Image 1 (cartoon, rainbow, N blue to C red):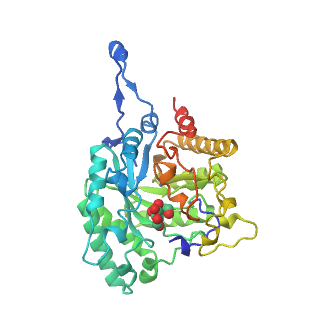
Image 2 (tube, rainbow, N blue to C red; image 1 turned 90 degrees about the vertical axis):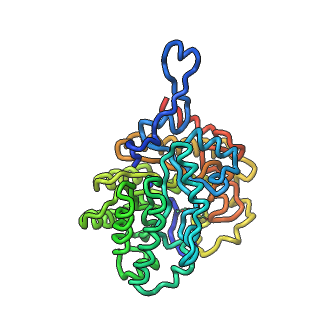
Image 3 (spheres, rainbow, N blue to C red; image 1 turned 45 degrees about the horizontal axis):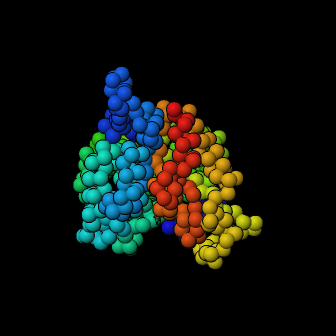
Length: 386
Ligand code: 9MR
């Protein structure tokens, strides 16, 4: 999908306090029992329990529980989950009359078993769309298939999936509508209205989200405001804006992120950070004079582009730690507006950022290391809430 995207810097989204997934897990020690003081075991979900949900995107082996190390970590640390790939249209609805629900069903069972807030990702997205949908040129036909898709997928998990990324990445970097298949066939942005209307009709209790990257950008912010205001003016339900949050140690600025949190919240929707990770590696489009290219294959194996292959330097480690502290301080400042913070993955070794935009690099974007251990940055983030 990113091949088609020309953006200079991919920095690239309510709990619903009502949902029982955010209840504290209390652990009572023997001495506490004597004093009758319940203690909460430190973890991301427990420390931020009164602030927002803490989520992780799960890959297939985590969902299927074959990756037992990760599953232990997920159960201990997170109270919300998102399927990294397994509910995208090409996975769940690969052929016109063929659905593949096995992994999505297992995902929902996983979330229920661990009493988690369960996110559906994603209903309409131009990327990872089943090839047969890309062939549709007729508006009536596309409307029919969108309706069938949303009715079937949302219907199957009604009351089980608590929030949906209804539409993903509908905007260009300047806030104008992305000319996706949906936009082109409809001739305008009305496909968003259809998608949100349908999702609400099928499951009126589910939280409905518009999700996109780079939503800290002032130009792109205008596009989000247009979408949310349009839906609201037509009485269509939208509950939250999902800011993906694929960020780097260098940017975006805390100020830009904060301005977006405030602007979206003023629209009367919640803000969610749906896909948080922080890259420390150089990106090819940041090189002097480099143009955005279709492929960065020629950098594969180039050590200059993979400086921490054998481990982070102390300086780089400090930078990442400081960046995460700044980000979480901002989240805590706006905890009344933010309902969920989801990391895009669980451990560094499993992050998509080891293979994008250059394949085979060694990145450190999350709070758990390759051995499933909490990193120093994890403890610093937890310490913000002790
Ligand atoms: O992390 C996902 C990666 O494994 C897939 O190959 C990729 C395919 O496009 O999608 C990644 O997840 C994306 C998410 O679904 C939507 N926002 C951007 C994420 C990172 O690309």
